[in-house]
Amino acid sequence: MLKGLAITPPVIGRISIGRVVERNGKRLPEKDDQFTLTSQVQNRDGWVLHPMDEALRKEAGGKLRSIPVRLVFNDPALNLRADYSLFDRTTGRPVCVGNGETSRRVGNEGVTQQPCPGPEVCPFASGDCKAYARFNVIVGDGEEDALGSFVLRTTSFNTIRTLAARLQYFSAVSGGRLACMPLELKLRGKSTAMSFRTAIYYVDLVVRTGLTLEHAISQAREVDADRKTSGFDQEALDDAARRGFSNGAFEDLIEDVPAVVEEFYSYAVDAGGGEPTTAEAGLCSRLEQKVADLPPLSRTSRS
Image (cartoon, one colour):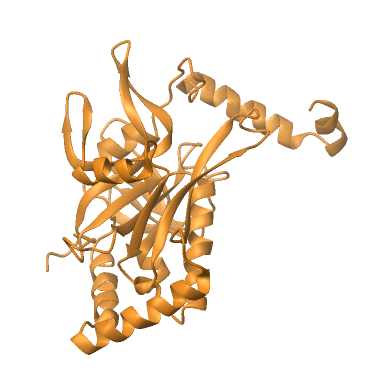
């Protein structure tokens, strides 16, 4: 195995709740209120839709807001990998990746381990570090490719926190049979003061429509028994994944990172109230910090 190259789950497509559009000669991120399944191929108009997108959309009768899935691994941390990531905006290369305690940072001496205080107080990141997660799922029941996954990449704290909790809970109640559970990705909306009362969307993980949690656990036990009878070794699969992830300093390939930076780390203003420009982002950050530093009574009076 090539050292320094992370061996990640085979990906046959992407799941997104937004897209990158061209406006006034610039490529800008645009949020959406539904899922989109794409292939890994881009053309002039953006990512090419995966054939499963049309099939699932027909079943949904329009907007795709839920996707039946199964997980690849029993270990929650293998299905969802989240960290704090800082990318070089000019080259698209990862510069520093941490977990809030330690980080791997690229410097003149190569990759070194450094303390990671988190993005809010890190002097090295200067506010450009974000939580970034990758979530691999098998769409459907893996009829065509039992190990081929779709990847959902996200910088949403709501999505990361919700998925992390669901994975831990489903693993606990199923007796560690996470990869056998019949699950469903579900798009949910919420409004907050920070979103100026407009809806923001995040991804949740639930049992499939029509099933209770007890029925889903019962199905998971049956699937687990059938797999063991056939010789399917889930524990060995999880171990192989752990070795693969640990083989490289960074998970994302250099050729994939520019698309990540473009989709999640671009600053732009659009008519729909998108992200601020770089200058405005710095101003917003300073204003938010000033508000956070106000005494509680002062914050209340300005609401």
